Length: 105
Image (spheres, rainbow, N blue to C red):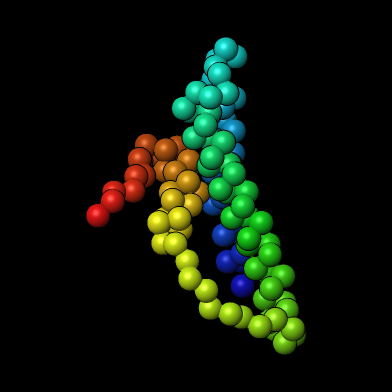
């Protein structure tokens, strides 16, 4: 299980590192509201939230194992999940020359 957690943390960490590298390579006069900066910040925010969730989930598993946590099913927004996945893996994909995009049905 710990290897899976390490793998799950590695992907968003690499995406954050790629977003930071992209921002660092921008010209100093690049504005904060530039689309590249905005997209990188969005990806970093999504990935940091994902990493927080993974750590929180690890703590929850400990509580589940000890019988101190009750799980309650809840509705979720699939589009939000897909957008988060695209943000998380978009940086890794871009670094390999692949473009991820969501296509509405």
